[in-house]
Length: 320
Image (cartoon, rainbow, N blue to C red; front, side, top):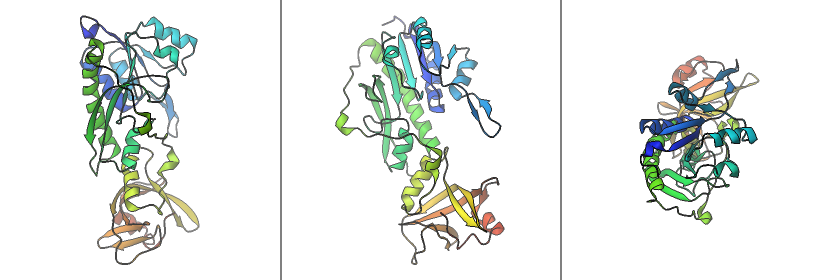
C-alpha cells in the first residue's frame, strides 16, 4: 500500500449523476485520479444537441484526463495500461469491462452498486427496489469479475426507503451513503484490513434496463403498484397514459399522482376518471390513483382542476 493513500494512481469510470457524486467524493479526498472514463457524448432532444454527462462536466472542471471509448479495443486498452492505475473504481458506468481490463490494476477493480447484493444485480437497482415496494435498500462495494455484479463483496450499508421517496431523492441518499462507504472501503482494502466475501448466488435477483415504453400505465394493476412505478420513473421515463378524444389517442403524462388503496363505495371501469370527494381519481384493479398534475403532449403541465376547466369532458372518460 502507498505510504499516502493519495499516492494511489486511480482511474474512475462512471456516467450518471450517481457516479458524479462518487467522483466528487474522491476529489474531495484528494485522490490522484489519473484518468476518468465515461460514456461517449449523446445527442438528445428534438434538435439532437450534444449534451455532456455530469461526470464529464466535473472531470473537465477539475482538468482531469477524459476518455470516452465506444469499446475497449486494443487501442483503448493500451491507453488504459499506459495510465498505470493502481486501482479502478466504477460506478454506474454503463459498460461491461472485459477480463483484460480487470487484470490491469494491481489492487483490482472496485464497483459501487446501489443495492444490497446479491439482490438487484443489473443496470437499474434503485428503480427496481422502488418498483418492488421495498422498505429498505443499500449500497455495495464489490470486487469486479467477469459476471454482472457477481464479484466478492468488500462492504455494504443499508438505508430505509420512505413510502414517498421518489427516484431522484433516493438516488441522492444512496450516492451520499455510497461515497462515504467507498472512501472507508478503499482505505481498508488497500491496507489489507478488509477481506472479500463471496456472494450467495442462490439469493440473487436481477433487474432490467428501463425503457421509455415502461412508463405506460396499466390500469389493470393495483393503485399502489402504479404509484410505486410513478416514484421509480419520476425522473425518467415518466408515467403516461392515452386519452381517446374526438377520435384521437392523446398521450397524457401523469406528472404528479397519489394513490388510495381502498376503493370508494362504488366501483368504476378500469381507467375511468371520476370525482372522489374533492379529488379526481382513476379506477384501478384495486384502489384509486389520484391525479394531481397532468400534461398533454406538446402542452404545459397543469394541475388537475385547471386541466378539467379546459377539458370538461375529461371526467367520465377512460384512460387506456
